[in-house]
Length: 134
Image (tube, rainbow, N blue to C red; front, side, top):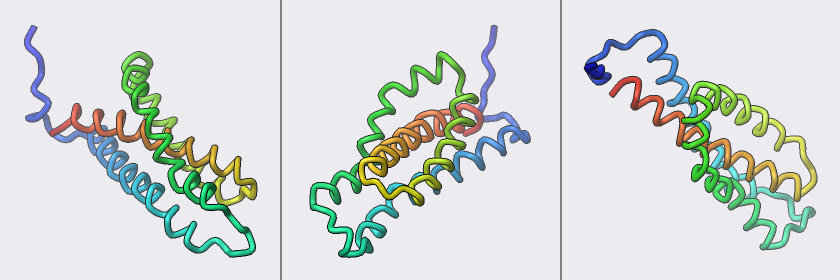
């Protein structure tokens, strides 16, 4: 059986949807990773965050990126579409949730979870886009 050459396939509606989802996911991921530096710089002095907490909160989403070590295999087993759709929802909910938390430990957990969601987007989204069309 001859395999299909995806590089020469026409861009269908589904291809465009995945492409747009991946591009928007990359924008959201970049913003999520970068905005924490701006936000932590503007923390009021009344909060008195130690340098340890500043470092942990700043690195939280980078810590979560280690989730990419598992995501590819799980996505292959359970389906990229399910992971990608759940990831977009998780990125949105976690991003909003961090706006309303006042507990540092909870914020750290949310930041790590955001990093894990970014890992899913990097691993599943990019692989899906390159599989659909080059």
